[in-house]
Amino acid sequence: MTTPTTGAGAGAEAIAAHTVAQLDNVLLDWRHKAVPATAAGLTARDFAAARHGLGDLQTPLLTLDAGALRNNMDRLAAWCDEHGVLLAPHGKTTMAPQLWAEQLKRGAWGITVANYAQLRVAREFGVQRLQLANSLTDPHAIEWVAAVSSPDRPILSWVDSTATIDGIGRALEAAGSSTVLDVLVELGGTGGRTGARGVDTALDVARAVAASPFLRLVGVSGYEGSLAHTADPDSLAAVRGYLGQMKQLHENLLAGGLYAPGASIILTAGGSAYFDDVVDVLSPCISAGAADGGRAVELMIRSGAYIIHDDGFYRGISPFSRDGGEPFAAGMHGWARVVSQPEPGLAILDAGKRDLPVDEGLPQPQLIGPALGGPMQPLAGASITAVNDQHSFMTFDAGTTTVRPGDVVRLGLSHPCTAFDKWTLIPVLADTERDQTVVDLIHTFF
Image 1: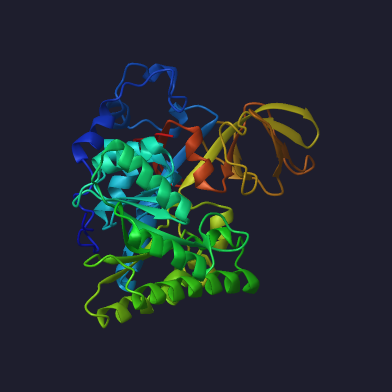
Image 2: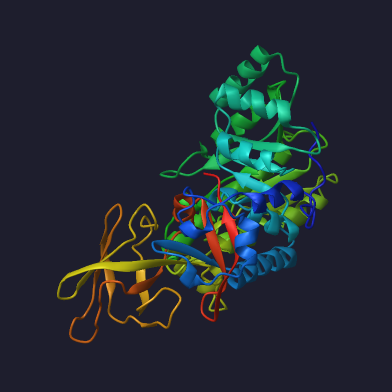
């Protein structure tokens, strides 16, 4: 099949808006731990239209900030437009079609996902262009992708071994399918995650794709984020060295005539931590492509966490934080109530691992007050020292701070990818700091 024309703005009609809008008709009930029992039987639309305040909800709670989300989406969309690159946001961060729709409205090429189940969610909500940032190895997934892919509704996937290529061929042959799937050869790095180890190995994979009657090679893919976890000089050097290998692989594929004839070529890398390095190292391939027999070359980043951002890992590593400019805004917060103050300087909160992310740093106490939605004061010197399934341990200076059972603590969080998966429904506040009116409810599908 032929890869459709790419370009900024192409995603504007790339999701079924009427299907996404149906989420407003979902009836609220006991399955939605973010809303009170008094909301049972109301639709999500009716609940949001009632303009409830934060105080109408209960703890434990995760909320989003509408202004922060808009700021973050607008900011990266403008940055991509300025640098002439495509954005295919990684949808696994939120698994929230309502947010995907907003990203697509701002010009995203399509949505990236990580597995077969996520592909099915995205296609159910009418996402037209999809990228699977993984290899197809499950025969059921291979058959499904072949059945639902088309030139105007493509599903790109990655390959990193000849064994994967052989497996796709066997599955399609067994299914009697004549579909030809578009794939990108994935380059990995030593100690990283998936991906062919080294340019030479990746070239062998590309040759196997070119020889397969079931596949077309349309690009090079990779993920630099698995090779580094900080922004220190050594980490940035490792990232940029890896991206240089991706560039070399692309140039070798061009020289060897291994890309499928007539296909637009896609180079894709870039999570939410190093997308500036991706563009700096790989963007020369875009201009070089114009001089290469007219072959179009597109550079695509896949940042996903940027839309929510955080008060932890991404706040410290994001390019917009590292360059001294205005960082993305933290778009999520946790809210927990003190359920016990059993000894001086220790409070037990009612939010735990089932409610809040802990894999990229523990929650950070920010504010405290006697009631949810009421006045709050800075909570200086307090910290979360441990998190159980349903509780958090907060230490504080008992000589300067008074904490009582029933008090509410606002928490800064780290890593949206492991925050959203704990909530099927997430209230959106107009402005966490100034207007805590609930203006929307975001549904997730993990």
